[in-house]
Image 1 (tube, rainbow, N blue to C red):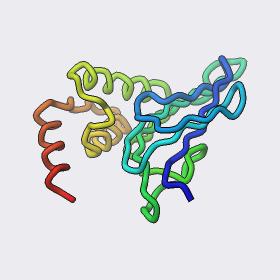
Image 2 (cartoon, rainbow, N blue to C red; image 1 turned 90 degrees about the horizontal axis):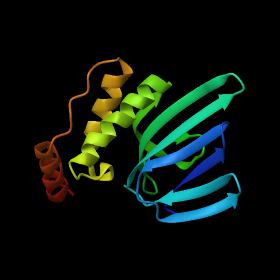
Image 3 (cartoon, helix red, strand yellow; image 1 turned 120 degrees about the vertical axis):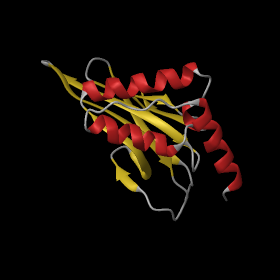
Image 4 (cartoon, rainbow, N blue to C red; image 1 turned 180 degrees about the vertical axis):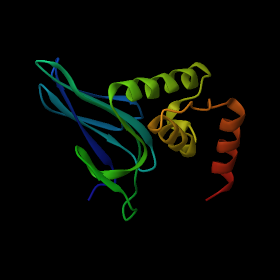
Length: 154
């Protein structure tokens, strides 16, 4: 049994589109012209964006920021994510997805890789955007504190 978390990405132009917004892919396997499987190591954080449309327009849009789990660790089961993952953020509907994507940009503008952001910040973003509240920005000081805490805690 592999310890990697596998994500199935489908791309059917103007119908179904899923992509990785950020994350460190360690393996990638094409399935066919419209599908590929990407894999992540345990404990790595990644973002998956999904968009579905029909002849009348957008049917669904979703963003998930997830943490790949280790074997024997608890996880949530999610479609196209195998075996599953720890959900840090899960938002549906284009207005909320767009806001979540706009939260990522200033983090990257500070030179911080979103995969290194404190998990509690992604949970904060989820909670605030879920109820249409303003998100507190992620600061360099907050990031330094998280990196220090991660170093000293096993």
